[in-house]
Amino acid sequence: MALLEVKNINKSFGKKKAMTNVSFNVEAGHIVGLIGRNGAGKSTTMRAVTGLMSYSSGSITFDGNPVTFSNHKALDKVGNLIEYPSIYPNLTALEHLKLYAMDTENAADFKSLMHKTQIDGDNFGKRKAKNFSLGMKQRLGIAIALIRNPKLVILDEPMNGLDPQSVHDLRELIRELANEGVAFLISSHLLDELQKLVDDVVIINHGKIIETATMAEFFSHDKVRWVMDTSDKDATVKLAQEHQWIVTVDDGHVQISGAESLQQVITAINAAGIDIQTVNTVTGNLEKSLLDMLANDDKGE
Image (tube, rainbow, N blue to C red):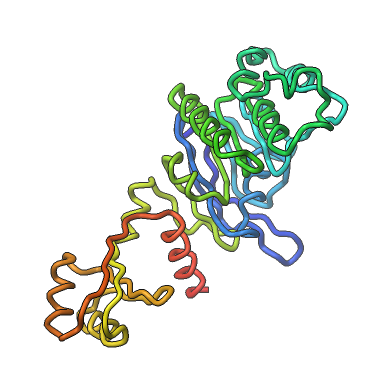
């Protein structure tokens, strides 16, 4: 049984459907990326999973126990940072952790947690949260999400406001905790960072899940592409179409995929009397794969 099971969740706001038969699982120790455009339903899904919002049909279970808007008992072992951290301006970082640990019997060690999330330095100390930068508030929010020693952590844009070193350190912390069996459900617009981190992806578009896969399975959709400049762009496109290869023109460059090999492409282009000026091989990229998948889904609407 998966640690988190979301089955056929439906949610509407008036006549607008926000979630349509949303289903996916999160396994213990897995880092799952919930990915989609703004307004696709990511935050709505996370709010439903954390019991912050009701849903009209379907079921959500965590660790075998049901999660609903009126039943939060199962969520004692779930930490979350959704949208912006709930921070009180006149409390210090340590006072925040003590506050959020009050209703749990198995709180994390404050000193260790503050060190792991980098909120133990001089910048924090006795300073009140109203004087924290955006990045400092974000790190405190992540520490709050971890205060219960959770089995599952749900993070919405956790890298917001962090500098590159802090992003790297957060990625290392998440991977360390995942190796210890903690599961993560993460939404972020920083797809390059997600690509370095997640094990599985859940793609949502217009409130519907259009793909759930491991990263390796997801990239199987994204064939190796050869990006080239030739002496006759239009003739190159026509040639690729005649061979039934996948061809697009992006920023003036011809992109070809679906051939058996680069050599096959080069041989065909040379035989047609077209000169190849530059050629580069491009492999799996989360952003490109996502955009292609969303575009294909939009065509089916």
